Amino acid sequence: MGQTVFAGKKIVIGVCGSIAAFKVAGWVSELAKEEAMVSVVMTASATEFVTPLTFAALSGNNVHTGMFGTGKEDVMTHISIGRDADVILIAPATANVIARLANGMADDLLTTTILATRAQVLVCPAMNSRMYAHPATRRNLQTLKDLGYGIIDPESGMMACKEEGDGRLAEWDTVKEHLAKSITPQALQGHKVLVTAGPTREPLDPARFLSNRSSGKMGYALARSAFRRGAEVILVSGPTALPCPPGVTRVNVQTAEEMYEAVLTHAGACSVIVKAAAVADYRPEELHEHKVKKENIDVNLLLAKNPDILLELGKRKKTGQLLIGFAAESRNLAEEGLKKLRKKNLDLIAVNDIGGDNTGFEGESNQVLLVSSSGTEILPHTSKLHTADLLWERITSLLMQSPQKA
Ligand SMILES: Cc1cc2nc3c(=O)[nH]c(=O)nc-3n(C[C@H](O)[C@H](O)[C@H](O)COP(=O)(O)O)c2cc1C
Image (cartoon, rainbow, N blue to C red; front, side, top):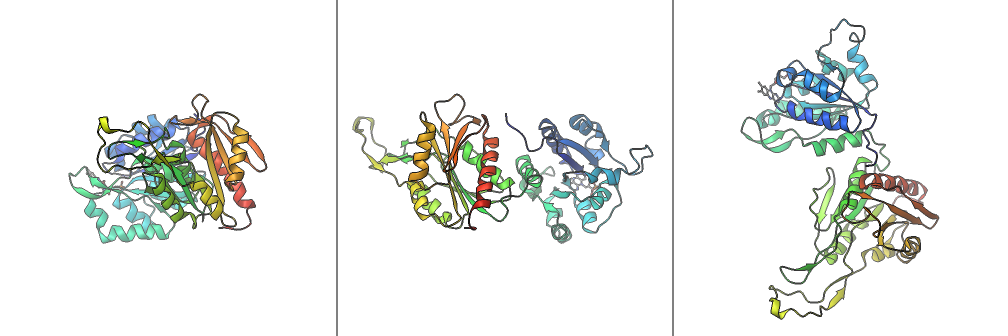
């Protein structure tokens, strides 16, 4: 559900002779499913690992393996492939191709295509950890960085050679985010943003807590979308099962009081704060050191009020800083939203209709009503990532109108 950033984008994937080439077949399949137009260029060594037929079938396009074809459309392939590419991804990038690119060589179709393109080139190194640690490889990668190539660092772990260390091809989730970033206008470049997500847990004893149904998916989607737009993103997150989105700095918290501390520590340096977390309003007044026995539980649980983080942020808001809130409401969405907007000094509030089908908590999709001092706007019922994209578009317009950077 919702649009994908890759739809209609021309993505060239250069595959080199590494054992990790088979993983990239899966990536091509994912991109094709997301309606990208994928062209694959393989080095001669790469064809020893995976057949061109595999990539042709998965991409739905011809695979390019040589420079010297004589067919009409083959003669200038080295120029034409990169000419209208939105981005070129070299994955897996061997030590050999990295060395050749660092020296400006153009002795096969892939390296020649790279020299002839104006598109951004992302490089995903994959190799044995000693090859990766070799000073020549380190120098070559540094040279590529200096030349403006994007390097997606490999990960650490067990490799095909049964050795452990740095050099394992980056995971698809990471590469996908860098690819998405490379084709997204960098409207938040130079901005530091703070996003909060998830529920908080308010402990009663070491085994029990009060919490709520927030999954964190909306806040995580907001963090992901902000990274794609070029922001430096801090995600203050309550407990969720979600992995940290690539490129995002996550600060884990449990309770509302911990979230209050973490948010106020980072808020001052941020130009935009989006509070998507469902912070518990109350906590058990007493925290028991040991598990309370069933027979000793007081059925009248006394509660204490938690700090109101959004209210505090509204009071401390700096000139030019934008503060965006979320509200979960089951009726009178516009009035409740406007009330909260004014009370907490917000620039925009996204109201979730928690009475609706498939909106709000836990699900993959959402529909929010945006309320600001200039009116209301209902966003379409769509994926949480697409909702996040639309929200950042609105926030970007507000940033352009705001008096000065925070
Ligand atoms: C089984 C096997 C696995 C290999 N895996 C890698 C690898 O992961 N990374 C790498 O840089 N080279 C690897 N190599 C070495 C490259 O295939 C070799 O350097 C080749 O010349 C690379 O050609 P290319 O860069 O034009 O694709 C491997 C070789 C073999 C035989």
